[in-house]
Each structure stands twice: as C-alpha cells, then as structure tokens.
Image (tube, rainbow, N blue to C red):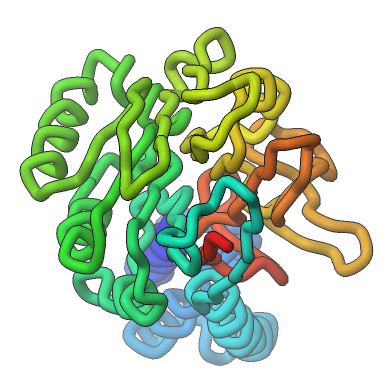
Length: 333
C-alpha cells in the first residue's frame, strides 16, 4: 500500500512540475532545473513526466528527455509488474503438527494463521485473501498481530478481512507492536478502541492475555503490550495431556514460551526478512536486525514447536522480493 501511495504521489508531483516549468518558460521566468525534473522521473515519476511532456508539449525536442523519460517508463512498468506480483501473489504453506497430545477427535484439525496484514489490500473486500482461506476449510483462524499499521490507520481493509473471516471459521486475534503503538498514541488511541469494539461486534475473539478452551485444547493469547514480562502458563506446564497453543506476535520470546509450557506457538513479526536471498535467507526484519535467524518456518525448541509466519503485508520497506505473502495452514495430527 505504501509503495502504491508513493508512486501515485511522486507521479502527480512530476506531472505538476513539468506543467509549471512549461508555464515559466512561456513567461520567461526562472525555470525549474532540468536535473530536478529528471531526478523526479528517475525516482518514480516517469509516468507523470511522460504525461507532462505530452499534455504540455514540453521538453519533447530535447534528447535527454525524449530518451530518458520513455526509458524509465519502460523500466517502471516492468518493476511495477514485478513488485505487484511479489507483494500480492498469495501462497499457502502447510505444516503437520504431530503430538501425542492431539486426541483422536482433533486429528486433522485445521488451523489457518494470518499475520502482519498491515492494512494490506488483497482484492475488493479482501476477496482474494478470503477465498484462499476458505479453500483451506479451517476449523479456526488465528491472527497473530499487526493486523493494522501505525503509519496509515485507515482500518477499513482490516475490518473487511475480519468481517469476511468470521463467516468462514471462528477467529482468534492477538495484538502486535503496531497495535501497541496505535493504542498508546494520543491522536489514534480512541480510533483504535473503536476498531477493537467493531471487530468484536463482528464476532472476532480478541484474546490478548486470555486463556480460552477451544474444541478440546487450551488457546492462550499474549499481547505485545505485556511481552516479554508476562507469558501466561499453559494448563500443564510440567507435562500432561492438555494441548497448549499460544498466539503471540514476537518470535524472539521463544524461551519464555517454552518455560510457560507451550506445545505449539504461532508467531510473525519478522516478515520473512522482507527480501529473501536463496541459500542465505531474509535480509532484515522490522527491528532492523540484519539476516534474522529464524525468519520463517516450523521450528522445534525442545517440547515446543513454533510456527513463524512470513506474514502478508509490509511496514519498514514497501516491497517483498522472493518472499510472497503467506497464509499458514497447520493440521494437527
């Protein structure tokens, strides 16, 4: 979303600058430097520049513009197609979680995890995202934080997702660092309270720092507000037959999750390292840690298994490369 907004704004500015420079030329006034116009073209405004050249009949006879502007238009067409595919091509990653604590009744039970949506849009009314989720036939849907984004708090895309998701399966939601920042903001805190009230009225189970019994297992939610100090313990932290599943945003608190007796933990936050280099891994995470380890996958820590989702949206860098937005599906066995 941020990338789309950036491209729209810089092209509108570039178009305006070409028109303004044309008017100044006609009035023999001080001109906008050609280097400035070309800089806007190079840094994303090529479409606005080309349109400005055609509409205002400006710079059409100068080779540096006749060649450079169309060349960057072609480059940005290719780059935009590539970027849109990288950012909006949804993939489904499936894991089997095997444990003696999974009862016969729970065998094959399907959990869909959604993480780090960041107000990203996947079709009108989130149609593409909801269609993919529905195809997995989930028993429950768990949302592990950063459903919204502190930098653009237009919550409608996320509300559309929740409104559609509750019609597919019960939805359980915990917060991430972006919800924490919004809630703590003087200017945005009230709007966030309304958002929580709205999604709860839709039927979303908001389980920050709560324990609930779901279909024969214990589902525990921990808010980003209380990490790392407070991680609720499972029903049987020293052993036993109760399956304890934790929803948390931050994977780096894994030691605390293990100590609390969690069997299965769903996390996100890392965004898959944003750009994944084959054989090396993700480059950086939202905490500006370079080459975060781990950055995705199903990971074993003694008796605790952690699912680390690559998530759906972006925050620090408005583009993913070799890191498609991910819906995680876990089947209990």
